[in-house]
Image 1 (tube, rainbow, N blue to C red):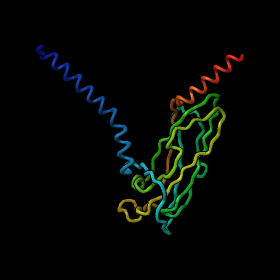
Image 2: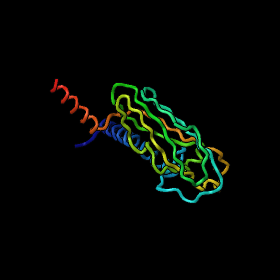
Image 3: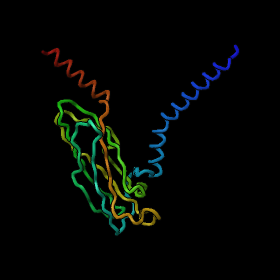
Image 4: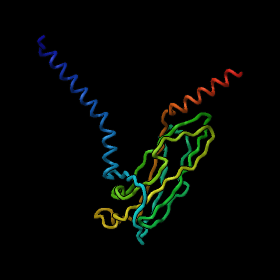
Length: 193
């Protein structure tokens, strides 16, 4: 079967569209991985424990925002703390669901100044998992972190006097198991009435 010029052009065009769609789909996870590995764009590292502790201190500021339409209330409990470089810090954010329905959320985060992103390491964080708040539920969500001592000798980051850790919460679909439990409860309530 011979392919004429129009069919060849059509096949090439479809191939380019499929290739570009695949690259666009893969770009988000690749960029996320790249930022986590390099600290590019203020993305902090994830660590298992703090290391050496220096006598130098640094201020860490905490910021909270929500995506447009996210009905939760979300704020840092403490706006700022001073810790020694290398020392493990613990901060809390408060979230409240004022609605009459369960809402799932996921937090994205970054660090400014961007040069400090490679030296800000989170040991444990509420942002590692999706969060589900029931109607009227209020929770305190911890983040455990440290600033790597390597910051004091880095050419670009050594003059950093403060770091801002920012979170933005956005609404996501309820996890399947939560939705299934809510559906089962609603069905059970309906059969009783």
